[in-house]
Image (cartoon, rainbow, N blue to C red):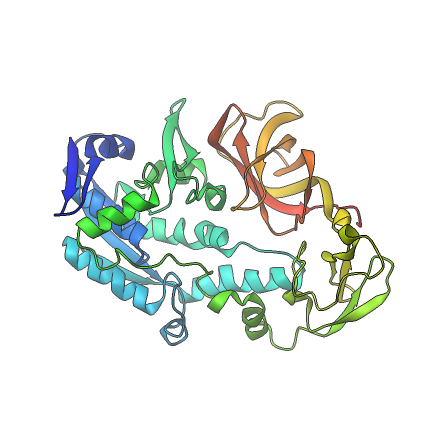
Length: 401
């Protein structure tokens, strides 16, 4: 069955039969209750709308992650007070039950505290992955199952397919919105319960569905920041969570010469060039004049800067690895690696130690600005959309280290 959404100006055809097939549930849609994690944004709202249109029994759940008074001062972030209200309005429009779960304490302990500690260690954390690991795909799962759900659906742009009888993850077809990087830590067990109805849609198609369903969030901007980080000012959040733990220190070059002062290493990330607080080197060729942050020395509280060449990284070590596949059966397995959500996968080789939960990655071409605390997500070179798993970068030696 092809479901048509139409207005006087627009018409959009959605293959509902394919959506139902992708849900991977036996029987009729009406036999299954689906819990939708509703953030109040357009993606999760359309997820709920499509499942309702397909005939599933849908319930919406929204997480309240921290104090409303703080959240209401922040626009454009998920799980804020206005977003909870938007989710409730969408649920009313669709005629489905909607519940708000208070996870403030859990989120503070598992995500925000870890975020602050990581920055103090000179790392670059990814709290959205930690939230999936410790809140959304754990406690929220349990609540969904207690509500009698056959599955929990989210608005992520990623695809779930059966491969050799087991669920596997694939990049969303919209390369600009693909969110596979943030879901590498999803376990095979979790994938049995998770569903991603938007994985085969583009963002434009999602917005068109929202408009044609007359949802109040159809034109709502995408959240750009981490939900608890106002205006992307990470350092301000760390200072608030860890008052008195940030000291001023020296900015030095690779030889230890003092070039300036910093107000806290949390203001810097590996590979940063702009806003360092010191100028380039005079009297040298242009390529050497630009200075980059090449190391954050937490022991001596120093920011070390130097030419880009010092950022060159040929190998990394990752830990707390999660593998959705058993593909790794030999040393030097060829893989594709994604080091940032916004970057394209690069080629390399991996040695996996399944017992230790760690892996060594060797890049075919040197990479620049790799930082501990980030994730390395692994893809299948024989099928570049296929997500194999990944881990957290714990060692990233560059030309300085």
